[in-house]
Image (tube, rainbow, N blue to C red; front, side, top):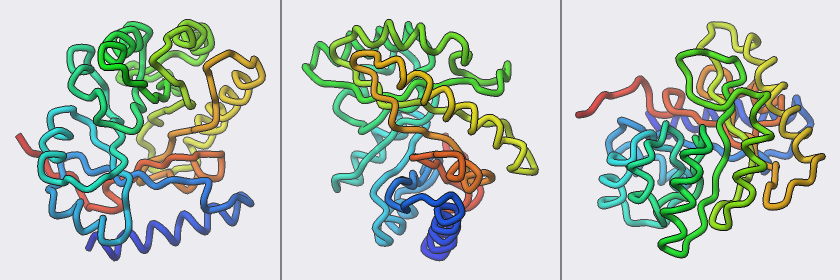
Length: 230
């Protein structure tokens, strides 16, 4: 199932890139493996998938005990400050930096180990009360403070769009996140490189690609419906 689903997702990605006049190489597929068993991840690996997204620190660490091959693990879920020290040296990207307090904790823990954290800043573009993330209007000010942290490199922005039946409804949020990224880039803030956009999931990743996504986070479209594990 995973192999067949990946083929279908890849076809969709290529078509979306063609519609947008983009190079397929500009878009990285993150296979969202949260709640999925190791066997399904290994099946995806056989299809040359090397980038995986996890929501919870403990689940990520448990999977890394079993899967020892070098993979790009991305933390895409809400990160609690007391869990930061556990992911030092464990992840390629932290997508969900949603507050200055969290960024300060990341700086402190990564500095202790002499490591650099590569992050995206999460923006709540739809301003949903149930979602984490900075408000769009406060993002630049927070980024300017994070820019001073020597052990953090900011690579771009991330958003979790609302769940909608019609993916076209989320186009405005993706378009506005891209505009925010461009606007911040034009400010030439030291230590801030706005070249990555993490947006779009199973239901709307084609629209996200059309609006400039460089990372798309696809779980159900690859692995099927979520499996809850304790």
